[in-house]
Image (cartoon, rainbow, N blue to C red):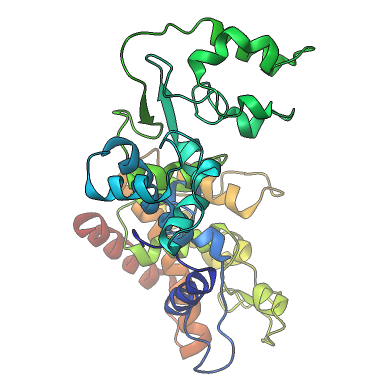
Length: 370
């Protein structure tokens, strides 16, 4: 993955194997049920996903190392060979001006030019090695963010040469973006030091595949209120269960009916003849209500119209960030689910006291060993 750009069909085949591993193979008996979309599964844990790698973005993040080496290790054999075979004039020129005839490896690198320009920033010294249109010296390469045509004779003009010619390069009337650009360019302080390329996604300015992948994954996304689940001292299987519960993806009766899977309706915990939902099973069922009361977490009068996720967050908020209480609440949800499954699939049931005792013991072990 760090040498070649994976073809789309390879990424899809690998993702299919990973999906079958998580949700179960579809070759055994009928079609396996994927409870969450694959995009959500691949989201980082702070964004509410399972934290699995997005293979396409991870592949891109690894390949950008070669662009970094081309700029920062010019004396290596690979860099010299690449310049000699493919660079028409200078490595700092945009890839559009490079020789497109080459190996598949080289063509793959050229296809990632936008990602490199997005991830790098030019630290201005003399301004002689930074291109006005193509290098990222003002936040975003101007070639991608300004819509008006670039003068053909000035396409590869350097930043140092462009500053005195801003009126020619950016004809009036100027937009707000262009006005800010002119002000930024006029305030540049050129020095005798050579220009250099820094990495935007690290504090030290050096390339890092991990930071690049993280930047790509977190870009434009909001942190999930469920990210605290990964810090609770419970087994990973229970954490994944809680995520599915919060997203409304547990296979309760209402979810089975949505998938056109026939099932006998009725709550096996309280024997009410209603369609079982996650909200009823874990919060509104008389068995669940009595269990929460015994544990010291009675119904606090939350909004009945609130979503299931909001109700779960309210329940966990009652723990006041106590590790023991968070584990106890999480284990209670887990215990209710296991008890429900025992009654449905094994026709075995335990009384409230036995379930309560099991939850106390399990949560204590979780906190101690997880």
